[in-house]
Image 1 (spheres, rainbow, N blue to C red):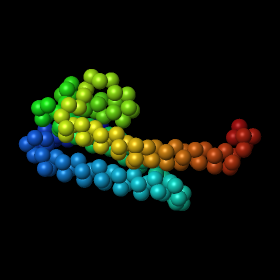
Image 2 (image 1 turned 30 degrees about the vertical axis):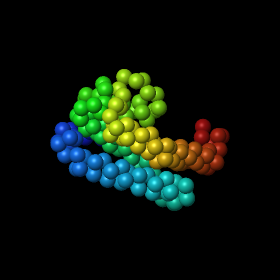
Image 3 (image 1 turned 180 degrees about the horizontal axis):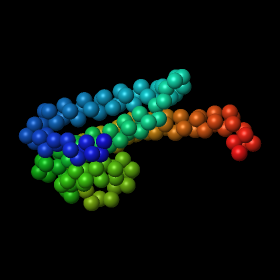
Image 4 (image 1 turned 180 degrees about the vertical axis):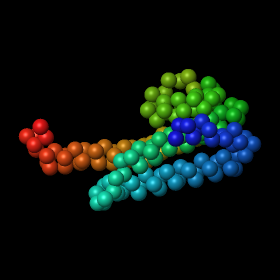
Amino acid sequence: MVVAYFLLPLDHLGPERPVLSWLLFTVLLILVAVLLVREVRDVLVERPGTRPGLFIALLIVLCMHVFAAAYYTLAKQPGQFTGLGTRVDALYFTVVTLATVGYGDITPRGEAARVVTILQILYTFVFLTAAATALSRRVRDMVVRRTERDPPEQRD
């Protein structure tokens, strides 16, 4: 996914094609949200035969790349960002925002950049937090089942 992020033709988006840029961003976020909700539901209802762990992790990474691409595209518009000029900068800002660290070296200055940053924070609170919680619950349940199935004296 990281390789795809660096190979995508993001330079064709942005101020030259604002409708396409916003449409792609919106559709991708909705798609990831729907898939995350479905996977979280499967974990919470403990649907037999499902293995959502890897898929949830991939969706979280995909979400990060969608926001990074949006930031990279927005940075082409004058006045939207300070300190964001490359794809690495955009990915860095996405991770810093996701982690709520906020170093201050890259700052959203324009209204569109601030809207996307607010969306990322809210999206993280709702979808990625639910997904991470479901994923950790799934891992914990697997460990508990394995421990119950294989008592310590049998594992040696």
